[in-house]
Image 1 (cartoon, rainbow over the protein chains, first blue to last red):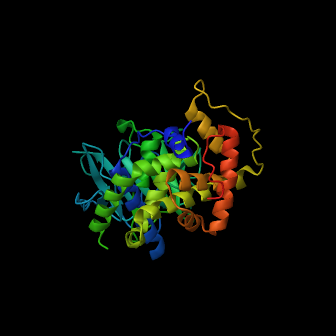
Image 2 (image 1 turned 120 degrees about the vertical axis):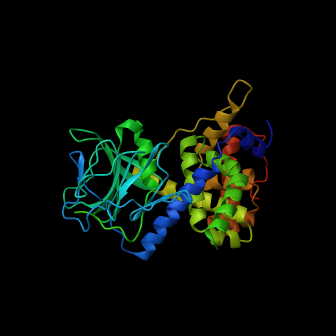
Image 3 (image 1 turned 30 degrees about the vertical axis):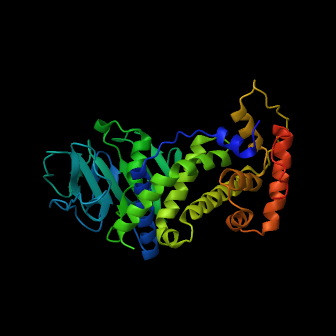
Length: 202
Length: 170
């Protein structure tokens, strides 16, 4: 038997998966969260329910104007949020200060900006828990946060969410057509930045 | 520091250091690859957030291992508080023979060490930090590193056999 260093070297594989982009993404996300925290006052969340996303007296009506979307960096600007790049063939469909909807390319714009059909789209909402806490279902720890997972029990689709700050939540509603796993949903939501311009619904 | 410079420097750092960080983390977690990956991800995320400090450090590489060790010890402290009841694992001396999986034996032996002693072993004997650097990482005096190292080596010698270094208190 050789010395301790050799033993230690032999005890762990040399094979390691190195994904620099993933580490960079996590770092950027954490830095944005930190800056927001230091800047004070973020809010969070939309309300997703019954297959429709309604303003519910929220601070602003959903905009029918095209969202400002750029792909200059690893995130896409959408309303008061920055979101990870949508899946291939999908893009930000509508966004404002409280929510983002991501839909398949070519999805026609909403006819009534006050009531937006969420079904089939990937919905990210910033909301208070005034209408009931999204804290339900099992919890999953990811990237230092605790996410709640709500299965699709009578609702339109499964949701994951986490508490951005006291009583303010960021919630992602799945788009069934994407066939995302819970972990994929959480990973995407984890990459969403809530800017200081965001206003929670509720 | 600009975002592009931060991203570029961080990316280079990750490309150069991630493998060794993960291997050190696997020793700290005694082979739990998922836990090791979590440690490294947390460490690298912290490094990115505080990159201006990392880049100004005398030794950015050592800074990373210091951060990894701190993340590990913090996590162990939290886990200990959660567990309340300390594990009282019966120690069995494992004879390292050709018939045994040496890797598992080494990792099992590391698992018998207290987290701080394990950190000393990884820092001193895997990462080859000297006593002063190890003391700096752990936030203690050099004498503590020496005594922790001596105890750890004695324990490992008992578990692994007599052919470990006899550097005792170095």
